Each structure stands twice: as structure tokens, then as C-alpha cells.
Image 1 (spheres, rainbow, N blue to C red):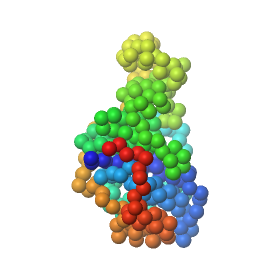
Image 2: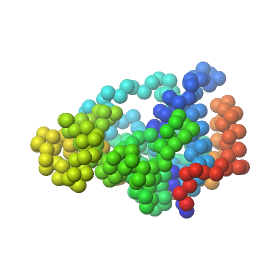
Image 3: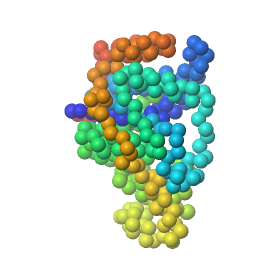
Image 4: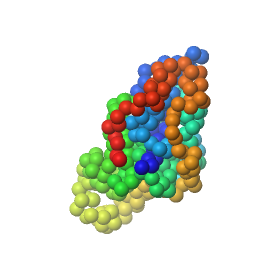
Length: 286
């Protein structure tokens, strides 16, 4: 079975930054996020056993969501300088593994992932810490793997696990967020409706349109805007090249050189060990 693993680069980079104790390269620049990202990449390859793999990143340019709602993510702090300096290094090392990177101005990595997922005829596993991605889950084809404990453990989400986590089916996640809002992305939803009430309303009325009919005009407008902000786009101007995304090994000469230049001997050892003797995956879907 062909299996395409799509990595939400920004989500995993931030997780790596906060999971790894600070340390530096030989020149004194921060190294923790780079180390953590590579460590996670090796684990993903070993555990999920993809035939194809790609990474999506956000771009610095404003997105369509910020054009729709100027307060979108406005409360989020600016990326720390210690992390900013590691972003290009992560891009470089991903490329050294022979893994393609996809990113598009005006769209988030989520939308790039959503678009590629729609294009793919293969089984897809999306690696992220972002719950919005759960709306893409489909037991026929699409699963989400979320790290749960630092970078060492994770959970695989199918439709059943999404319902357990969110209280609604994957297809209802944007409608749930349209009503309950999302403090992390700073959009309001409907005043007075929290997560539990949103779940109850969707269960009672069955469809989002019937829930809307019970709301005032002002609340309807807020709900519809929040729904647009919560919905992952699947029409971003990007097309995956599966030939370039095919991966048979991480142990490439350019990857070895990158790890040697970074002075990451432990990761180099893991890279060679995993290639020679793969660990039995706990996440096999075959």
C-alpha cells in the first residue's frame, strides 16, 4: 500500500522548540528546534513507514483568513528570535533528506495539506499538533498522527478518535468551531456558546443550517465568518509531485553531511540504525 505522510512543518517545529532543552551549535546559535525536528522526522519515518513524504510550511505573507478577519491570530506572540534563526536550517535539512517542501503565499500549511490530501489517491497520514486538521479525517483514506508527549509519543486519529476528542464527527469540526469559536486563533464563534453547548446543538439539530436558523442575525453572521475561518481549504494553488515525494531511505549522503555539519552524532547513529533495523510500528494501518 502506498502511504503519503504529510508533515505540518510549523506545528512540529514549534513542538520541537518547546520540547527540547535549549542548546547551541558550535557557533553559539540555537540548535534545539533543529535537533528536535530531525529527531521527530526520523521517528515518523520509522514508525509510520511512508512510501511518500512531504512537509508543508506557513509563509510570512498574510493569509486569506487575515483578510477576512483582521483579528485572526492577532493575540499570538511574534515568533521568538531563537526560533526564527532555526527555520532556514530546518528547511535545508528537510531538503537534504530528499523530502519536498510545499508552501504558498496567502494560505496556511493546513490549506496546503488539505489540498494535497484531496489530490492524493494514496492513504494519507497527516502529522500535526493542530486540531483543525482533524476535520480531514476519513477512515477510508485519511488519518492524523498527533504527538502527545514531547516528541516521543503520539496518537493516531481515525473517525472514532476524533469523536472522542472533539465530541463531533470530522465533517462537523468546522461547524463546531463556528459555534464555539477558537481562542487559539482568536475568532469568536457565537456569544454564549461554548464547546459543550456547540456539541449539544449539533446533535439536536443535526445540521449546521438548522442551528443557524435558531440564532439572531448578528450571531448568524459571526457563526458563518467563524466557519469560513475554521474550514481548511482544499483548493490552494499547489500540486504534489508524487515522484519527488517518494522516499526509500532517509540515509542520504546529503543528510549525513548535514547531521555531521550540525554535530548531531546521536541522530546520525539513529538514522543508520533505523535504516538497517526498523522498529516494529505500533501505527501500522495495513
